[in-house]
Image (tube, rainbow, N blue to C red; front, side):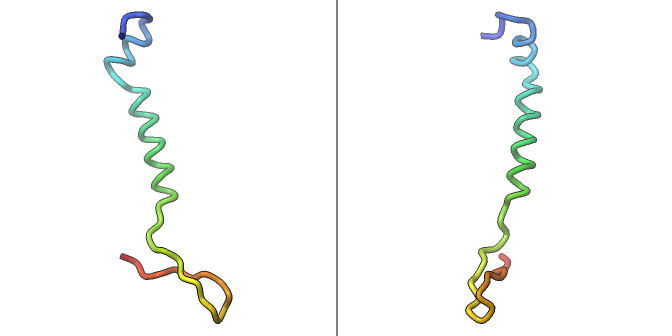
Length: 53
């Protein structure tokens, strides 16, 4: 699997690009993480933050 090109060989052994991409995805998903579900407020006709866990 890892012997077609020298770059592929090093990537197969070190997995540096894979780890960099995984860290990027983890960082972006942490930015979108929701900590509470919004609740609808009838008085102001908008959403407000719900209780934190």
